[in-house]
Image (cartoon, rainbow, N blue to C red; front, side, top):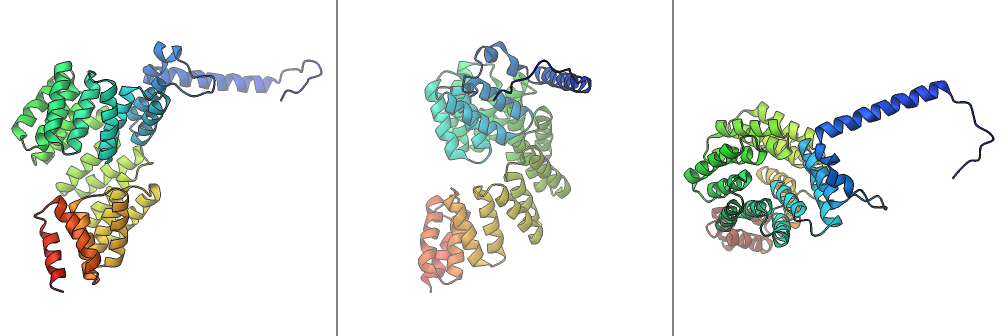
Length: 375
């Protein structure tokens, strides 16, 4: 709407000065962003400016995701990569970076779908193939992960993350000496790469060398203060019984990524392990409020109820975890045993059978079946 003016008004001196100050702040902010995130101002991004509708281009969304990771916010990065794919379904790098973060935040099955989409679009891109290897590993497909990581190295022998993901797959498949050798190759190529440092830390963690794992996770955090790095750091502190440092690490994870339930869940689990159940319950409830669809919190809350023999509440929480995608042996057998302990063996047996389908030697599940058969 335009208002018609009668003649030219006299300028308000104070208002002019205020506007000049605001303009100076804006320009200062732009200069800071240019220096901090130069990729946002690269010619490629400028030449593909937002469309007339105001929607960002796919490459600009990828740049936003990268910038969010620089600041440590994984949730924002996930949303940016998702938006990049929505804007351009042929953007293989966006799929790959989205897939990597999905795996790192516990959504392994969805990560595999996105990684497969990425590699179908760009089968010879080293980053895409390396991420595919990582996601295969996180889905327990270790030999396939090793094969794809080696293929990524063939595509680019100097691409350090491919070596890092290969080391991770070797560690997960029990070849620890080989894992350490390949991790060192990754370090030699890129000693300040966050994926390299994370996986070197992970190899040491799998080897039970937790102090060394802590050192590499700390170095990775210095490069990028990412939520999942703080989570890994806190997990190792917890194993070392360094409780206060573990709590601080999880709190830092919550600070850099307040949209995520994971750090709150880890805080709850840490207090649960110390048998401080009221504090644990408080963090579990806060995690559920932050993200009602984060399955691990329901599994942990159900475990706490189970341990405290509140079987009805355990059943409710554990079934919610399963409905949201949890499919682990311990969740299945706890559900079965909880039903058995409230005299519902008709409900218990199917869950115990699901636990045995995951692990045919599951002792709790076998004990539960024996209990029900003796009723």
